[in-house]
Length: 419
Image (cartoon, rainbow, N blue to C red; front, side):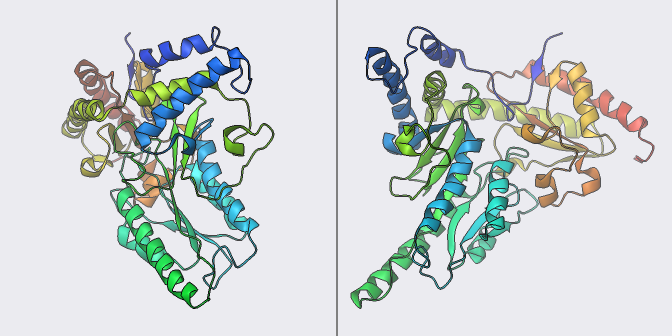
């Protein structure tokens, strides 16, 4: 039985060119990049090249790139590291806006790697606003504007949702924050001329771009982004390595200490093979390559979506194809439990997901679907198909062949399902 992989939002296979770039650093170029001798210098040269590759893609300085174990660590460093740094200042100097209690804005559909650090901050006295989303899974810009307060110090909104593929208005959010920061700075300059007031702390903007890098413009300047997180294994690179971008002047406290690597912000011996891997994975993502692959994947995704909607009754496509990646197709199959569909497809050699891979063992309904207004009773009846660059038309046809009888069978054994 040939295997069909449609779970690229969970992870992707390592690209052959990426693997080829990595292999020498496992044995031949094995030195510790912190060592001064020749072995170490060969290793650090590989790290430096990767840093340049990533910086070119994100349109930033190489010194603004910090290598981590993945986007989860990068998200924690961005959110907790920033608040920790701001708290070190003597209150109310960090804010100078009449309130000492800091305020953070995020959305209801974030990955747990953002939601849980925000929950920790709430326990420490930080105010957190969780923005709702519209039925298509997109944050409402007007709601975002209204949520900004005098004491807001951070907005963390993901670029692309991993479950339904909805694309957030990142550039618009960035522009709003920049305008507010510029206005506050100009007001301060006027006050300063009269010897009044401390320089205000700006609002910083962080985005988890893990699911966006394969498909969209991640130019940090164009998008007005201050901090950004990426995982290699979502872009045909290795697991266990990620990128954290932060602008040079952003205050940040390290969450782990000991080795002084990465500008004292991420101690620990560098994962040279992984870093070389993420550098090469990003190096494969030229604008031309992204545009071509988006077109090819979109054709297959639409073929899958339209085939399911045509051949299976009582189905809801939760992915709004107008505002999503070209790779996502998230469905609710009324009367058929998502986990049962997943297992039945797996027995046919087809890999899909019921949602975020990080929460696949959870019996809770997806917080993303609930935020979009999907009824809790049917949120469990959902499956995510996420396509990649190696999928073929023949594979999609096979899925469309085996899926309808699976759904029909599962509905027949469901005593409460009615057509």
